[in-house]
Length: 433
Image 1 (spheres, rainbow, N blue to C red):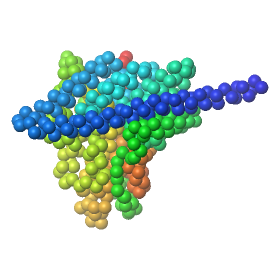
Image 2 (spheres, rainbow, N blue to C red):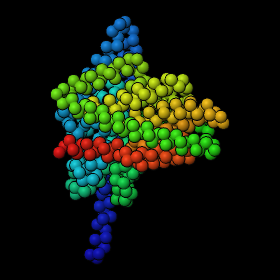
Image 3 (cartoon, rainbow, N blue to C red):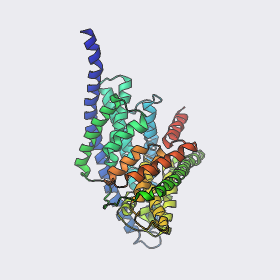
Image 4 (cartoon, rainbow, N blue to C red):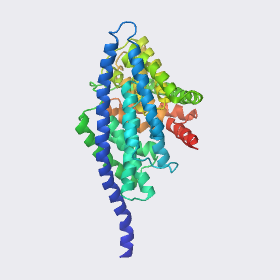
C-alpha cells in the first residue's frame, strides 16, 4: 500500500501541473490576444498619423519623430519602475529555468503590456513575442505561487507558460511548445512537455477568440522546389549563417555602445533612438515596426527591384538592433523573420540570373530565409522551421528549409558564435551582479 502511494505521488503532481497549466493558459491566451489586438489598432493609428504628417509642408517629419521619441521615453520610464520589463524577456525565462534567477512577479504583466504597446506600437523595430513570452512566464509563475507549489514546479510552470506566450504571439502552437523544449530547457522531459502542451493549446484557443483563427501570413500555393536546386539552398544557408553571426554582433555592439553612454540619461538616449526610427518611418513606413507588413508583401508575391530589397535589408539590419538597445519592452523574433524574408527575396532575385534557375524561387527562398536566419541567430532550428510553417501554412518548401537551416546553424556554431539569448542572458546576469 505504501509503495502504491509513493508511485502515485509523482502522477498527482503531474496532474496538478497540467490542471494549473490549463488555468494559466486561459489568462495567457486572453491577455496575449488582447495585446496583439491592441498592437493592430496601434499600427492602424500610426499609419493614419503618418499619412496626416505627409500633408503638413516642411515640418511634417517632426510628427513621427516626436511621436516615437515620446512613446520610447514613456516605455523607458515604465522599465525604470519594473527593470525586468526591458528587452525581450526570453533571456530571463531561460535564466529562471536554469535556476540562475527568480521567477518574475505579476507586476511584470501590466508593465510588459503597456510598455510593449508604447514601444512596438509607436514603430520601434521590435517583436511582439518578447512581451507575450514574458507575460506568459509571469502568469505561470504566479499561478504556481498561488497554488503553493514547490519552487522547482513554479519554475517549471513559468517555463511552460512562456511557450504559450510565444504560441500566442505567432499563432503557432507547435512552435511555442518546441520553443520550450529546444530553446529554454534543451530537453523533452514528460513533466515539462505535458503542461506545456496543455497550456499552449488552451492559450492559443483563447487568443483566437480575440484575434481570429487564421495564419499570420497569407501565402499562395508555393511550387515544390526541384531537388536539383538543393545545393543552391545549402549555399544560401551557409551565407545566411554568416549573416546571422553579423546580426548577433550588431545587437551586442549596439547594447555595448548604449551602455557606454553612462553620463547621458536613458530617457535622452531612448528619445534619440526613437527620433531616428521616426525619421525612418516618415520616409517609408515599411522600414519600421515589427516587420509583418513587409514580410506579408514578400511572401504574398509582391516583387521589389533588387536595390530596394537591399536598401530595406540594410536599414532593418541596423534599426532592429538599434531599437533593441533602447531598453524598452520588445523582442527580436518578428524583426528576425522580416530580415530573413528580405535576404531570401534578395538571394532569389540574384539567383534568377543563374542559367537553369529562373524566377521560380521568389516565394520559396523568402520562406526558407525566415527559418534559416532564425536558426542562425537563435540556434533553435526546429522552432524556427515550425513557426514559419505555422505562420504561412506552407510545407512544400520543407526539404530546402531543413537543408538551408542546418547549413546556417552549422556555420554559426563552427565559428564559435554564441546563440543570441545565451549572450543576452550572460549580459543580464552580469549586470544584475
